[in-house]
Length: 537
Image (cartoon, rainbow, N blue to C red; front, side, top):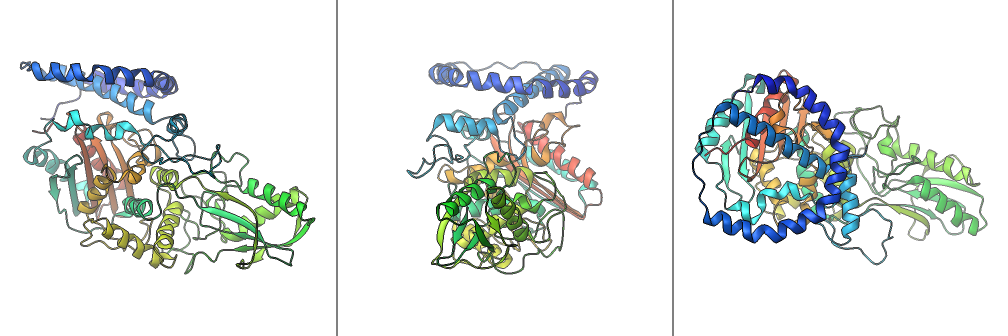
């Protein structure tokens, strides 16, 4: 049943959106303050609620269309506010600051946080925690709620996916995450160009192969018997030269500590070199020079961006490593260390360590990658998979490593073809079946290391690449969490949603041969929103 939207609600929506934005910080603070007490209260009353629910059978209630619409609107706003309060606020990097602070307060708790090693600094960034609301549909009390039926979903989704805006080819799958059962399929095994939903596969492979707690190190070393300092890239695209590092590895810190170490050796003038040998193969993606992706290098700062942005397309430095080394030289000179103009070199195995900085854990990088659809992090993650599995750290090696790692996890790879980690290459091929299987695997209790994939998905109407979508579709705002994908003629959406009955569903919608990107995105958004409001039985 499709319930028409009330005129009053349509007129009030812009005001509700403005109110939502205004009260969000206050809701967040209140939610954080009451969370411990709410948790204790929930735990204490749960047994009584369960017994009461078992004892009382609800009587049928006659529901009119206006009443149903009003209730749905109220519930939707409440759920959206709750989702935002739990997930926000977000900083400019795409990392949830509230969750990071909560993880710190819980020390060793959290899905991706497996404890702290003895040599880890007390102030070092912590692995990204899970967001409990993402997995609401997996709780024991909700699993007893019936899942949507195939017949009802088919009736709802076939109509929405028949929208001409979705082009000549469209495939779709919906899966119940708790059971792994497919509830809906349309061309489930037909491989299509996935665009940026490829990043979900890259994320699964990276977290599986390298681990959620893995950190990427950038080093400064001194060649013995010389005055040559080598800046050695480890493949961290989030290394930053900005004054406010915001938890990411800081080039300024590396320069400060390097200068201190050199002065202790009575060196105030050095030859500066840089080493990018960790990566092999071409630096330029097959799409060529593009504002969406810098040349891929084992050494770069701020993703080689030429402005102060942290995400989105922008002009990039033509040689990211030389750019990073030049900034490092300037920072050293500010500390009284004179340098030559930096040039490429390679550190020997006899080099002496001067200083090093490490990225946040992979879990945090993965969240930022998925939230912002960050192509630079995605290509770096593909190479981390290659390095972790003993392959060449280039485009081909990363693609082969992703495929092999997903095969180890038992995922359905028939028809899949990887050429990169970002999905910018139009030769990539994935199926809707594989995308939903990846999401189900991320929700599997046996694979807690994969949970950052679910917590990193953009939230409809609020964060990342979904922040400016769902403006005309309030029913999905705050409830749909999904990775977007857009290339010319290709529009995709894959993620999770808790339906009206509390079941967590994973979905993947892929459309090819589209001609109007905006119309195609709106059609996909409406389809995902239908799942959010769906009992569908």
